[in-house]
Image 1 (tube, helix red, strand yellow):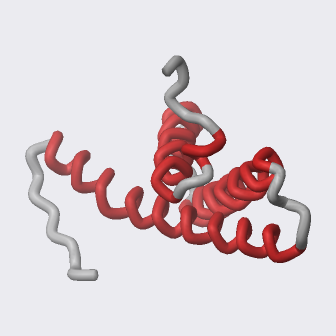
Image 2 (image 1 turned 90 degrees about the vertical axis):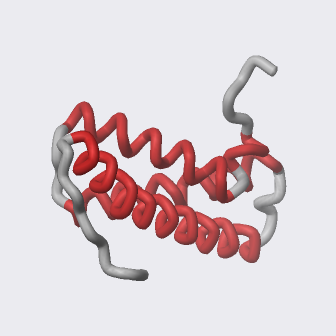
Amino acid sequence: MDQFFTWETLGTVAGATAIITIILAIVDRIVGTMNIRIRNAIVTLVSVGLMVAGAVSAGTASTWETYVLSVLNGLVVALAVLRLEDTSLPRLISRSKGEEVSYPEA
């Protein structure tokens, strides 16, 4: 195995969430802190684009139903990434600074 990600891996919720989280972290490091609405829009567009590209590359994007499901899967991935980003990273940052942060129950 010479690759971390394949199209089959990126077609799963776990693989797509992982790669979008990595892309978001890299963009955040390069650009710096960005507006939350812009960040959410970028994550959503990239997630939907990745899921549609995965369907096209797998050869299953022959009907409109496949495109609709790809868009819906992309939205699920975007929600997973944004929730992960909102809950885990502030907690890690606060722990590295020695602060204790409480979060409301979901």
